[in-house]
Image (tube, rainbow over all chains, first blue to last red; front, side, top):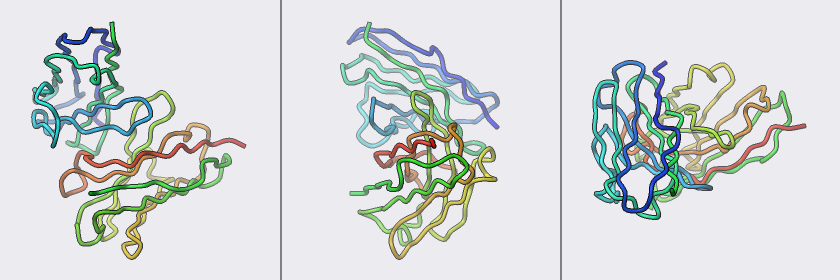
Length: 106
Length: 122
């Protein structure tokens, strides 16, 4: 099983700041990684797929990068609605999710 | 517009079988040829993929749950279902049905139901 590790567990930032979230895989997953956003009481929303492709309707302030074992989700300038939990997911070998990073308001 | 809606009992007794159904609207399970999946999330915790089924009934299960899970599809009703046997308190979670954003089973999930909380308790 491929294990995904996300860091940090919590990121405290202010609106307008840049957010950088990390996801590391226990073995190479090429570019088969996605990022989701989840707000309280809601289902996850797909943001980025295959490491760097924005899903339909996702604002350009969200970007993804990386390949192999190390991946990054960047939110260039945090909007109030971006404070949420972010999960990564791999599809290289079965389907597994990371434990999540909570982005909260500083 | 594609919509998925989970339904089923919100309370299940330990050792019994959890059964949920996902009703799909806005698309045909059969003619779309997409796969359809179940994911769960214990309260305050992360996401766990349970399994995925194709429109024709091919199934793929999380190895950690495989011995207890059965996913089935009813194309005439445009529904798919999950059964999880011998449940314990650890199976308490919000259960989501979802559809991948692309064809194939090894995919990311682009469409999700709202989720339904299932509590395992006597």
